[in-house]
Length: 315
Image 1 (cartoon, rainbow, N blue to C red):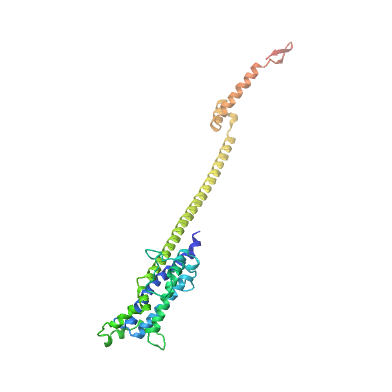
Image 2: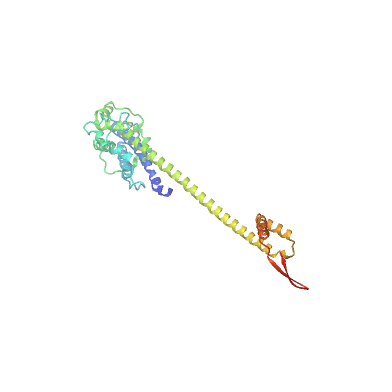
């Protein structure tokens, strides 16, 4: 019944978190670039940029855990336990998000192993590790994590951001540092595209569940309509039969009350013909056959009394 798919429909919120993984991946790439350059274009202090990067990294990890294993963001059952297509992308061999799934070369992440043997999850974990490395290398030492980066209106109007210039030395770090280069490549590279492939898998899963639920709902409705129609038909049929039997009883009572003893023979025949069509003809045939038998039978002697005594009369 359609109610069996309620759990699957509720698990459709997985693709919401799967979509957040793509957004958070690009957010981490953006804040990594701002942390390394620190040229003022983001209108954020270095501490706030580092806190923003840490915050989005933790959100990305939570979203990934919720999608794969559940237990977070109102997701009770993760994709690892129910979706084989997702698991093939995350843990299987090859790179199905690329035009050539067999080409899994990763020049932007040297020394991190072969993605072809580990799947997208290995690539995603490498992305997490690279961000941690960048934070330890470029983030200032902060006493305590805070969320001030979400309210930086006063900093945005500070005089220190009146004029901003790009530092060529800092720009060179974007390609010189392998971890930074790998993180920036994820903005529209393997990590982003791979997560997009899993997102399409969840879209298709939700579509299939809703389509199956729709078909079963229509089937259940058809069965319900058929049952209701059959119930009313049987009720109407039985009521009609009862009414017909009642009318038969009334007709029989009417016939029984008719004074047939005062009717002529022809009138009786007409009445019988009306209530029992065909019976009169059968009765006439039987009567004729009886008279024939009487005609063919030998005459029986009858006795009659006269003035002279008893006489035998042939009949």
